[in-house]
Image (cartoon, rainbow, N blue to C red; front, side, top):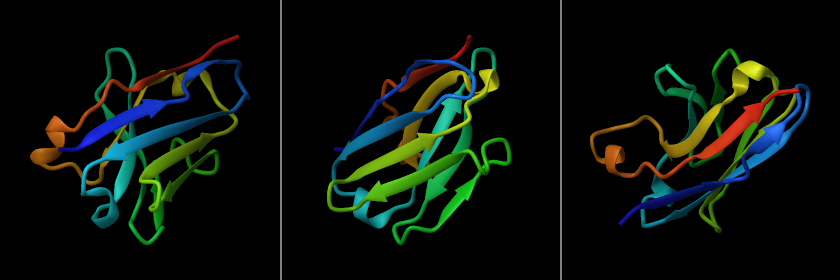
Length: 118
């Protein structure tokens, strides 16, 4: 069974940094691409960054140049380093496989809240 547990969120001032972590369990991690998603109040969940098993990355335009996704295949963890944070980055952040599929709907964890505010 796949379990995803996000951590590392918090309150940070504009321009600050946070590093999110996603601990995974189950057998899928080593064979799939992983992504970080976020959902702001009143908005749909969106993919902000993804990373393949081999380490190739992609980013949403809104975070390109500020966020860095990485993964540790041995530890089955995914990280998101967020720099130069803006108020519009405020959201609950989740990890999951990328792209999503029917099975991944059952993988969602609780997420971790990121609030960027002065």
